[in-house]
Image (tube, rainbow, N blue to C red; front, side, top):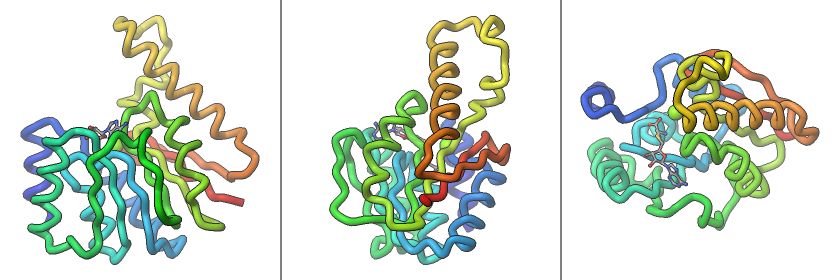
Length: 189
Ligand code: SAH
Ligand code: MG
């Protein structure tokens, strides 16, 4: 199960969630009894399919039409059309029509704070927010001087600023884990 999706992602360099990160995501879903999720960043539908396979109802947002079409195909293949609503949209233009137990942020890494602010009003009481790729391949611990590309340096700085901001958000209790590519979990107080 799911090996075809992992294989496709590997061959086509699609940045799907890492195995360790997925374990953390799925364990959190069980621990906090998550029934519904808003996912920002569908790609080929891998993480959405893995969550929906646990019975979670997923609304997932994707702005690339090619990825969206692939996701639709994969969702159909896994017979999860009744569990996953895939939406082709730029997430910064999407307004939810319902509330969710989990918001999983896994899209453009420089926009984490914008996504967080836009979607947390739609989080249920005691809901959770999980953000992926906060270590960004280990670069967030790197001395900025050692990151030669200016764009990459700026992205890494944004991710670190987001982490600082999130840590101090007083309506949430946040922990950071090193699973996969680094993730945060924030529990709404
Ligand atoms: N969650 C997926 C991986 C997502 S990769 C998994 O683990 O299986 C990140 C995806 O976010 C890419 O497909 C990219 O096109 C999409 N994305 C980036 N910025 C976005 C935005 N503003 N709105 C919607 N999708 C976005
Ligand atoms: Mg990710």
